[in-house]
Length: 342
Image (cartoon, rainbow, N blue to C red; front, side):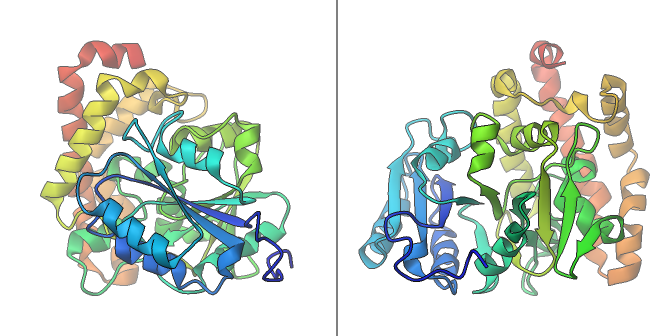
């Protein structure tokens, strides 16, 4: 197997490059880094590239303390602050990476087992697999909101119908499980589910084929146009230690979406109005309307409520409703930009 390497094999060129695009990450960075460095994987076979967007809390002190102990950390300054977009944090990390495989982690992603990396690399034994996406896992002490975010598998409820992780979490029987170890999803222009965050591993060669990293959604769409395949291992998990409650979550999403509708929409190669086959703006508006019904999103999680007997699933229709309402309000304030986006 290609991952059983001699310890000296990759002293100059590691097999795996972890890329973390961060900014003011002191709350969770230690836990994230600890989960990386406990991996049962030779230290000289991976590197950790931290691209900092100008943190003004204790983030850099934390990074430097780890750099004293671990010599495979590379700290890069990102003058643009943001991690998503051409030339921004993650793209800088890919350019600086030496590994054959790129692991994208956020500072609030905690690897759940010390075998996470080995298990996530397993699907790459098959040459057609170009990415390996981790599922998420909640913890007993999490708030109901945090349990919901981890179990649904995507931070933005608005994206649930088009998220690979969310759809596998809700309806695993609709996906092919290989060797009882991982799901395989063949992307195409007619079959696009999006992925790329919270512990996703790519072959570095992917970014050469799609002209570099921009954003998770754009990368997924570009891979779909080239009919690439992605695996989703069934057992290794990441804990996404994001916002603990709905209020802080909505505030965070408001900042992201305001930034998007104010300017970033101009640089996105994929548009949400292109969903479906054939792409249809009407279909997009129908999705928005169904999000506001509460009943349709509720119907989507009823099977999980019956199966898991976990009441936090009841939060789903309300989070979908409020996030759609928030995006709608912010869109109205930038209505001219929205029509340009269409």
